[in-house]
Length: 289
Image (cartoon, rainbow, N blue to C red; front, side, top):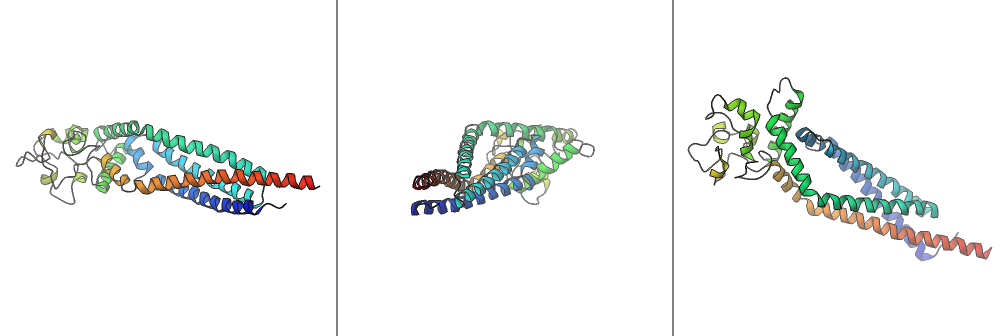
């Protein structure tokens, strides 16, 4: 069966686009696997929040990437051998994937504040009720303690969210079970934040204890009294620090996502063109016979 020159060009462009789609699927699989295995990925969020949602999201990315890679192979092979059935299957699945991806992005964007609120609530609970509590006999609390310390050191943050005057950043530690157990004997000399909240290696009297000499700097018993940052203390909450890290790469993330959607859309359009011309070629051959 012979196809027109334009169809032949469209066919090979479709093959190239499907190669790009396959690469995008492979990248998605890699990102999902990284999210599961990385030191500060889904497992860390699970330990901090007790929720499997983030692990499930990483698995969904792996599954989505696998489907994308598989359908790219179907589309590429269908174009090369000029199979209208494979291209038809490819078209239907790609349309469904486009709808699914756009819907997932829209839902995530629409509920981003709710997701952040739920994350904040779960992190707050683990900090207040689990950090440093009976860590020798409770494996879950021991893991939560280690993860909080690792995250605060890695992100240069302290507490859950907010900044210098927030009750949810450095000050939240004074409402934790960890502090109440330590501060009951000596509320003046007790450490009011973990050492992981400190900038580098400093004396705990500079970073962790009440700043009686300068009541405008943390640590204080009331965050509203604070007007100047303590250079020895990380005062930004960890959610805000994480958002700052993400925002540094948001342009690249959005650009890649948009590029993938454009490639998928072009692939759908070209698959229709190639499939239509293949059908016409079949009819022309039948008429000649």
